[in-house]
Image (cartoon, rainbow, N blue to C red; front, side):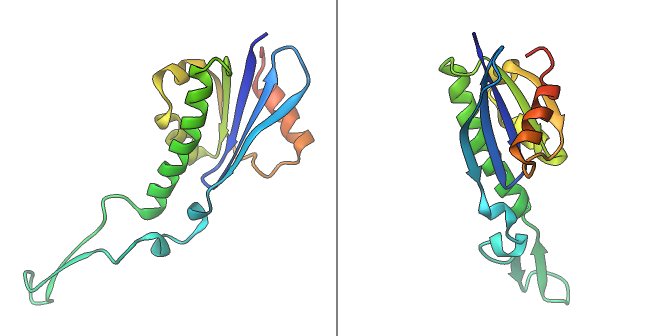
Length: 149
């Protein structure tokens, strides 16, 4: 019997659950919280956007925007943390099949962080935020999302 893993995530919380194929027992593998993703973008930046004084027009200088929004950077860091845990499980043989459930924008960020071998193990991708659902409702929805698992 192979084990199915379920990643239920948004940009600030992720639950990794496991179920052995053909059985009804669910087990929490890990519950991750990324508090930085909840902070306002301005408080995440170490300093204000770049400013070069005396080189610009009469206004006194040029301002340069950061290449990546600080919140997007934190989302990518958290997605990498989740992907590392799942990649390790797939490579160690602890996870045979994977279902990703994440909020619409975060699903793409998370999927991009997965190792190619792990991407092959993904059975389903669901663009919904189920991180706040009670356990019974979450298990029912995960069962529906993993038809054939």
